[in-house]
Image 1: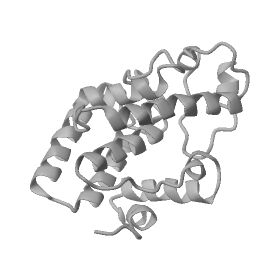
Image 2: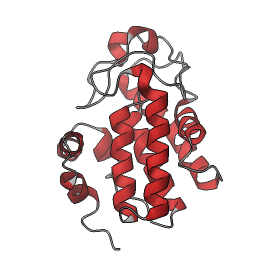
Image 3: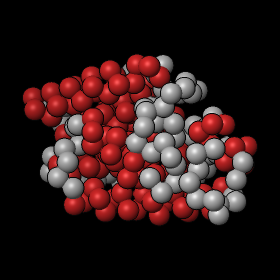
Length: 201
């Protein structure tokens, strides 16, 4: 599968891979974007099971990296490694390690001091992790699974992200991307309306 084929027909908001990143695809049998999506999803299901049994603390840099590695270890050589190039989204890549450490410190403070209600804190942290965009690819899926991991550890149910509707082109994904863009500008209400509106306290 060539780099151009990997980047073809990406859903809105998905991050294209650089040619050298695309060359790091592990399974040699994959020939289409559809086959890649299926393969990645099977890898992610393994990671979801790992989240259920691990004792690793969500608000820890090693856990953040290990979660990404577990999600994509059968798919990409760079799974769990921070990106080394800039993308159309995300902070300048040399700042990633420091930004993740600041993210963790803020998250621990928010949870410990109850700065925000638990669901709101988790969703704000989800947005910030997407905004940092630490990895070459898979950041949205990683941030959502990480958010559910955090929620579980603070005694809250997972968020209903919408399943496949969020990973494929469509109105639900468009609303999600628009909500993330609004949060980038400081308005988190669209994100709350999309995912927290029907949640019980």
